Image (cartoon, rainbow, N blue to C red; front, top):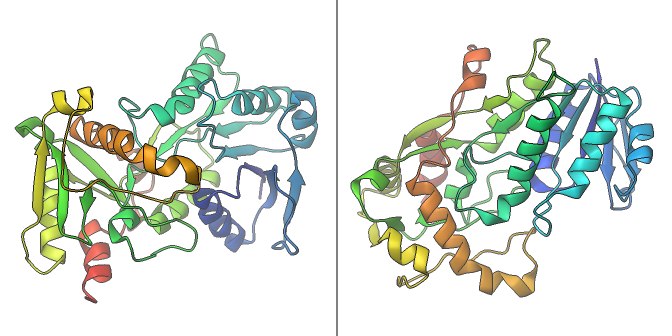
Length: 318
């Protein structure tokens, strides 16, 4: 048993992991949040309301903590000041391991809303440049397979999202070109991600910085074919856009994915739809969501649910 702190644990991904960790009934868990505590808490958990504004206060809170995992979203600030203070507090408090708010792609190119993640990658690398000051890992599951089940909800907290490969409506928006079609993408179910993260917390060895968690890795063209297969063998309507048109913002398609994501204010969702589509399509085309199966190798006995089995189970009901 170790003492674990979860920062920003009220986010969807954070709550999925927290529930899985609590279910082990093994660890003392601190939940750090800027929100008020809920009326009831699971056993062995403590809720600490914080503004994250004081490194000294955070260090006091983290005294005796072994591992800190951050699910903080800082899209409003590219420098990620909250996570920087959290990292500094970890060092002061003598925390052994830290997981920054990653939980997605290996590359951040074309994804400007993830700028804070890039900033923290640099900050942690610089912190450990001369010697290891704080052990850390970049946990990356690629794209959650659950998003391809939208509008079906397949996890307790993750909000279904419409992405440019839309299984529900049998359609896709892709960057034109063979290289884009052959780009790799990793799909990992939320359930498998949470289960692997619990095992990572309990891992007695040193965390590798590159910490990919890979359910199923395939090419974009294979993903489209999988969609056609699980959706009854009916061909998808594919609209291809040149990279140049995406970069210039002059692209035109018959539809644009629109979502109500908790991290995007309601008043910004309409305006965010096109730039989000541009970025995701370009990132897909460059393999940004393909990750190395690092934890697959460390946990050879773990049985990942394949994307075809998972999505076939979801869509086979229709």
